[in-house]
Length: 195
Image 1 (cartoon, helix red, strand yellow):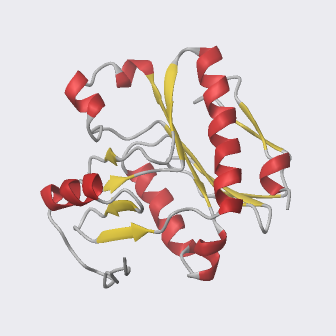
Image 2: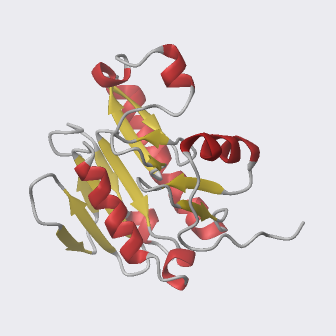
């Protein structure tokens, strides 16, 4: 089957987005607040391996901690601004999660995570999408995310996003702290930054 090129700026309604998202299983789809459809190709091996490590560390901590729910990159959240976004890794406190109805939890949850990670992939660099990821991180903050990490493994750089603060840039950190959002969580970046 030949790939269909979606022109930049192509717009769909939220209803059309849901139909596409459920029908198209090979690509990840997102929808901006102004209705622009974003099609992300499947993850390559290197990014998939690193993303699995991020998800695994978050999942193990979440299961032990018991104060929230963690999600992988296939989960689409409906942000307060109307955008449909799927962070690579995310976490929501149980207090917020349990306020959703079972139907809301089963569908695209209408909630912003408390915490989000985006992993910069080789294809993001190749296709010059780094600035798009930075804008996405800011959008997360603007919609209620309380802590966000943009991780660029190739350059070994992490950008830390917090509401009301300038972005903090760390060069070659070994670990990241979940701060007061994820008390006791420490992300080990050794394998994420490994070649």
